[in-house]
Image (cartoon, rainbow, N blue to C red; front, side, top):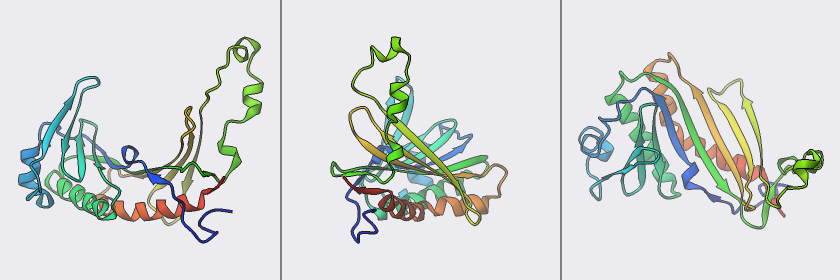
Length: 225
């Protein structure tokens, strides 16, 4: 029985590094620096603290650090990642992504992903037993491999759901890491190639709504051990 059906919510926690809105497109990475963002994006015009630019060399990428979120531009995508689990920050991320796009509508957008990840508590497990490593797979490895098999193994099981009245594909992944961590990953994928700006804006605006849906599905996919 799921925790939701038992009348209480799961106690799993949001994994911030796996939570973001990712906007696929041919972005001009040089434009999206702190000064430009503060000047041209209304929701960022009065930051509580001056944003900073961080650069990583291996592999090379940059991010603009604000108090509540990171903005990560690249040539292929623009990612906005929250720094805290706060629904108000998710709403702000929706607004900021819309405002950036309104300033750079010449950028061809091919897709948008609303991504969320939840780490299960020690007392929680996935509702389906098929999400763990199938022992028959391990038992049927060739002898030369099974003889050297270590104790730590990982497994992932992914589902893709398409809906008749939704504009997205929901990719749901049950992730069992080698260290025993269990994570439930959500990807709401929107194919926006050749779509009009109005449709792109609707998708950007719905990031916080996707979080609400992810919370409900997560509570139905987890049970007590």
